[in-house]
Each structure stands twice: as structure tokens, then as C-alpha cells.
Image 1 (cartoon, rainbow, N blue to C red):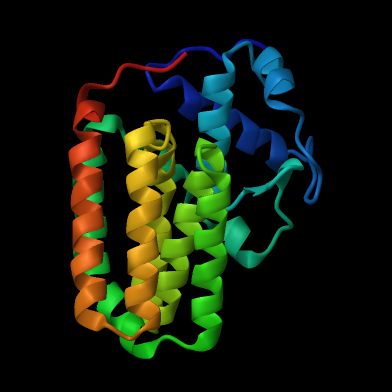
Image 2 (image 1 turned 30 degrees about the vertical axis):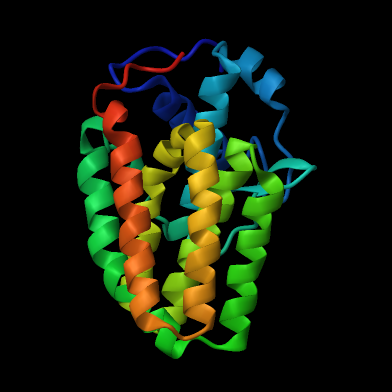
Length: 236
């Protein structure tokens, strides 16, 4: 592998593409644990920050999974894994962050109240699991990022709208690295956890109006926190 050549794209996207290619070539097999961040950084001759962001992107795309306290693993293959639109994530630049967050706002302002009306006890259990991971994972940005994604995908599933839920899954692939960067800000991390507690309560109490209001407030907070990312330089 060696030093990742610069092609004008953000460096972590180039590393993510190479890790994906290595998995597809069978260099790392399904169920296999990846080397540590330090080992991957040495392998690709980049910083740990770049490796962390690349892995966060691949976790969001479904290729890798983070096992808390145990490391990062290649996910077991399934039709969803093989057909995931990973490359759509690699094409999105930081200038598109605001637009992507706005799409999530529009989509989830409909999903959240529907989830409050249609959720089951099993859906609430999944939401609670993701919320617990946020609360106990703070301030680890990788854990917060994965837990936030899991919460919102569970919320989408609870809505009962399969098409909208799949759209949100696709949307999260380019957004996962954005969340990873935002989660490094302590103020953002605290807001993230607190607002998800309130959103959880609204959904599981079947308060559709409260759920809609809370998701709009949360997504607007993301837009406010992400303003500095519009002209974000490459991370090395």
C-alpha cells in the first residue's frame, strides 16, 4: 500500500477507497479485525486522524463495524453490504455539507412524527440502545458518530416508511465523516446527547408534535455547528 497519492480529493476519502479496495481483494476478510489506528496510519503513511475519519466513513457505509472496546472489524457480507452505494459518499465534498444537512432536516421532519405514532416496543428498545451508547461513549467521537447514526436509522425504521428509511441510510454515508468532525467539539457532543434524550422521550411517549419539533431543533443545531466546515481544509 504505502503512501496514499494525492489526487485532489480530501485525504481520508482516498484512504477509505484504498481500504475498501483491499477488503474487496480479500486482503481483510469478513469478520476479521483491522490493524490498530497506529498500524493503519503507518501502513498508509498518514496521520491517525485521517485513518479515524476514513474508518468512520466506511462504518457509515456498512463495510466496517466498530465493536466498542474491541476495535474495528470487516462486516460479514450480506446483499446490503455488497450493494451499498459507497462511492456516492466519496463523491461528496465539504461544500455540500449544508445541503446534505438540510435534506436530512426535510426528510426527518416527516419521519420523526411518523415514528412516534407507529413505533413498537422493539423500536424503542433499539433507540434506547443507541442512546445508551451515546451517553456512555461520550466524549469518544467515533462511538458518538456510530451511535448517532444507529439512533436515526432506528428512528427511520420505526416510521414504517421503507423508502424513506433507505434514503436516510444513503444520506448518512457521506455525512458520517462530518459527524465525526463535529463530535470532536465538546459543546456539540453535549448538545447531541441531551437532544437525543428528549427526542427519545417524545417518540416513545407517542408525542408526534414533540418529536417533530425536537428533530427540527436538532438538525438546525447541526447546521449551526457545521458552518465552519464549509471552507474546511484537507485533514492530514
